[in-house]
Image 1 (cartoon, rainbow, N blue to C red):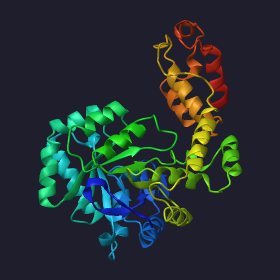
Image 2 (image 1 turned 90 degrees about the horizontal axis):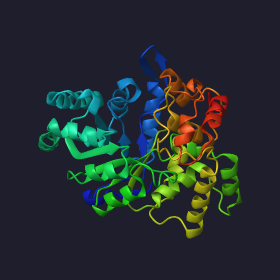
Image 3 (image 1 turned 60 degrees about the vertical axis):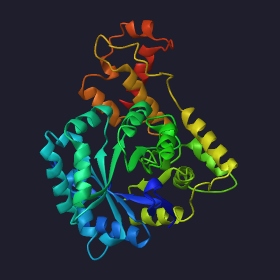
Image 4 (image 1 turned 90 degrees about the vertical axis):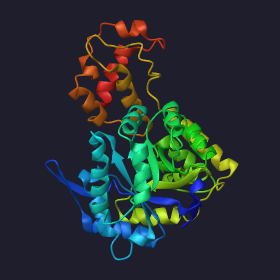
Amino acid sequence: MKMRTFGKLGIQGSAFGLGCMRFTNTKDGDKVIVDEEKAISIIRKAIDGGVTYIDTAYVYLGKNSEIVLGKALQDGYREKVTIATKLPADYVQEPSDMDKILNEELAKLQTDHIDFYLLHGISVERWEKFKRMGIKDAFARWKKEGKIRYACFSTHESYEGFAAILNDYDWDMVQIQYNFMDVNNQAGTKGLELAGSKGIPVVIMEGLLGGRLAKAPENVQKLYDEFPVRRSAVEWAFRWLCNHKEVATVLSGCNELYQIEDNLRIFDTVEPGCMTKEELDLIDRVRDAYNSRTRVGCTGCAYCMPCPNGVNIPRSFAIWNQASLYGEVKPGNEGYKRLAERNESPESCLECGACEAACPQHISIIEMLKQVTKEIG
């Protein structure tokens, strides 16, 4: 397992970090039942293979992920790893809730300290809320008490929002969504480099975009197959990430033992600068091949909104484009279902034409909305 330096912290961590959000589970009503035996075997196999960074959160798997991880880290495994877990803004209504949740997490994890304690998925608005609750003083106190080692945050904010949060506190680590398709999305490459310039280690989530980059559509697979060096789509995606010197560790949410084995193999061969110019050029072509699958050139400007009958036109097109990009065009799309539940789906279109008159891209919106419903509705 390749080890990487966590920026200004100076500590070493595994290039592969195990995410604990996707373990096999079933549901009994609102209750999530995790296959604990399988999950524990996956966690321990990863640690035995050299993984030192384990990521979980208060809300994962119906609030059961921390419990399962706590059980897996018995028998001497806790001493081999650093734990990252998270404080959810939605559960904090008053300052005392922060201590209450942290203490609950420590009990679930069966440990006396959490190494990386993250504010979970914060926006600029949530960061302001945490500040009003006194989070800066809380971080200092928790560190002094030995309950946490490092103060961190995860986010899906835009670059501007990310930069505002990053520059407002002396953070020890940050976690962002990043992959070769998200170079200009959310924090993006600019955010990665900004954190790196401050010596702040960056942990990567969604390196495979929820698994979408693990199975390449036909036009993308053709590019991979034609390249002299043969690698799986998963390996290409992870190598591209680890090529960046600012990346501390890349999270992978495994729910099968063979995935652990494959990741251990991949992350034993990656390090900053591991990709050649030819390989980087390949990923640029792969990105272009994905983007060529875009179905409608909607920029999301929302000049077409509000729709007189409530159709969320930009979101409808975004869901359609996303499905096409990653080979998921089929009826019953979950995003479409959520639009329908809110009466915002294209099926509500009255064909009044107000949207088309306002569209600066001159998109035939009415006909395109019909296609959205036909293909993924």
